Image 1 (cartoon, one colour):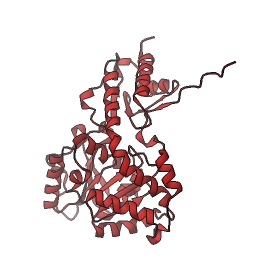
Image 2 (tube, rainbow, N blue to C red):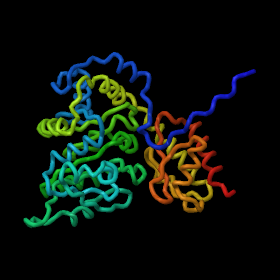
Image 3 (cartoon, helix red, strand yellow):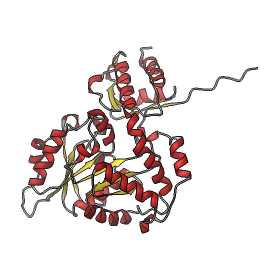
Image 4 (tube, rainbow, N blue to C red):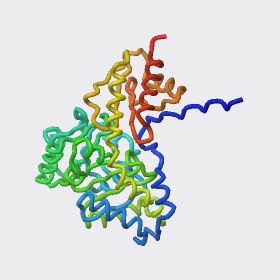
Length: 352
């Protein structure tokens, strides 16, 4: 008898963090030259840091096991206990980084809501505390590009630069959570160096759309990175033979940005298909990178219920609100899988 047909593999749209390392990354990891990075002696880590600094046109960069640790390190380096960090109301550092800003850096997030997650100076300026000794002082402005919880929205460069100019005039540094800054770069057709030139520090992830198994980098001035290295060690981020991870990061950094446009095209295709399904609300024109968030209120079901039903049919995604669902495209989900996912979504939300 012929073998039974193999079940179709899951279509994992929960996040671009679920990507598997490519064969090239695995080869690089197996062959990586290593040393002790706490002694700054791992040659592969050093090459990755130097290459990241070069690409972002910065004096130095530092390799971290996670973007959350890199963001926390930047915040702790720029601020002191008892100060405030201005960020957007749905910023990743506020919602998804375990309150590390408060618990470890000792800062209070001062959140400012913004349409599409894009802050402007007009929104930020009223949140800056006056220089009165009994008021917590503003120490840092944090921005996010692309903005995760607003559906991968991209900062217009002129707005970001305007914020930096005004912040610097007010004596405030600006840190950019650029976890997916390469997606912003592809969407805007401008280099990551150009998009981040005026911020004082920038974090970006290797382990999201770029596809490396582990790691993020923090880039800035040499003095800032020297201080950040101390904080990284304090937080437990001193790694030893980390070149086996950095090697995959080097491949991701050099190769994956060339194909990110496919993820954006697939996300737009997914959004257009979802918009045609009764009960689902999404504006495909607002999907500019690889993240989309859609509303299922019209189905009469909650997002959690829809996600659970989809999971039973091997389509994985996540609820971000009572009626909101997020899907994220990446290189492990091709156009055929997107079309299969759309057919399954349509069947799940159809009236029974």
